[in-house]
Image (cartoon, rainbow, N blue to C red):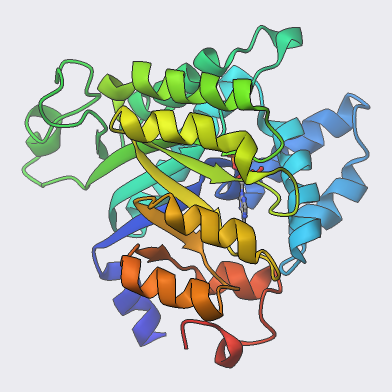
Length: 292
Ligand SMILES: CNc1ncnc2c1ncn2[C@@H]1O[C@H](COP(=O)(O)O)[C@@H](O)[C@H]1O
């Protein structure tokens, strides 16, 4: 318990957080209950899926589809962004790179841009903690709060969290859709978008589909991080991803032999989450984890 307190109190940075992977269970259940009452879903089925702790990677992506059905409207995207950042701040995260996949839904007038605007509105709506999401050198007037004024009004220094955004490309997307996300990221650099992530079900999609958009992102100075080697037997794709020299890669659970040597010599930093890898059954236990 003591060490848990120590960990909670320690100022931390979080470099691998998916917005819809960080939603409070209580919020998901509340949203599911509302849709259940409307007869859109069967609440009991959804409740058991949401409340389950460990799940395989395949189940995990099914859960994401369910979460998206619950969260993908503008008001809810704003709400979950606010809650997720508040939760990180409460655990003493001082810098977070929050990644999310911009989504389109014509039926509710949602474009990738309006989805991201809903995210920004979530950042702006936080008042329990100071949020800095505008990179230095950019106009400060959009900042929701600063360390002056409110921050010091009652004589105590409030918590401050720096938030930067990564736009994710889902491996189900086409080259055109990926390019649209990169364009959007470029247009939103002044509101804290710093890079692009490639994520989604690792057994879907081809590296070649995303390469043009990722190359363009890199040429334009956006940082790129790739989910890489999350499933076994992806030698060719892993090799091509490493040759691309992204700023970082995520997970890297199954990188072996030549690719492992390539990764080491390239010095590409790896984002590792022991909890995610164990919970999604990448390894039977920590002693088998590549980090050990
Ligand atoms: C467990 N390992 C993982 N591997 C690959 N992609 C993952 C992931 N965890 C999450 N995502 C990606 O993030 C999306 C949810 O957040 P956003 O809707 O973008 O905010 C998922 O749909 C998936 O594309």
